[in-house]
Image 1 (cartoon, rainbow, N blue to C red):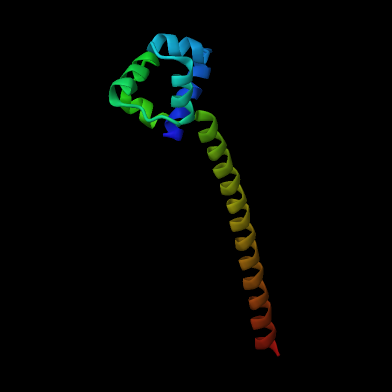
Image 2: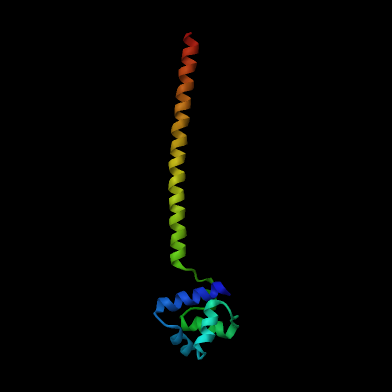
Length: 113
């Protein structure tokens, strides 16, 4: 439930609403809403539907909603790792070429000797 609470909090922040604003819209107390955001209290289906409607999304969208900031950070890390991997692959190919060249030099010297 903590993850769902974090999603709800993020959505609330994106709308620029306070906990009081959302609590009033849901017709619950501020402490009750705070417990939802912190994951202290479980959310029943009707409350989940009410929250999803408030943020103009379906329950499924609310449950599967992801923090785009966290996703972007993950994507950036993956891009960095991919770039490093590509650089290493290029280094390996260059080293393989050098090994082949050295092997050819040795083969030529052996034949002429």
